[in-house]
Image (cartoon, rainbow, N blue to C red; front, top):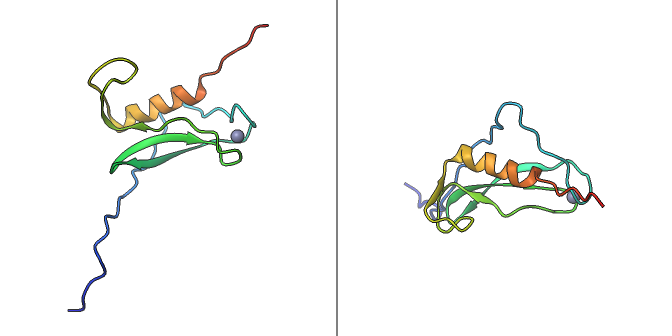
Length: 98
Ligand SMILES: [Zn+2]
């Protein structure tokens, strides 16, 4: 049996399925169509939405346990909850009424 190549951890990216009716708003900086994607943080899947034109993005929302998330302790997200949280973050807009 031939010697195998060095073992490398191949992380399978889970498929992102948006909740029914969910939208991803255009990039707030340049208006381009933003993309949702899976990234890995320390081997754990995380969701982020990113603009492919100007690279605007939000901090990835990681599946699993978050310590001190938003000032609260021991907050845990499922993969689906991480997708929803990412959508909430990206789609939030400040409306300047001045
Ligand atoms: Zn952009």
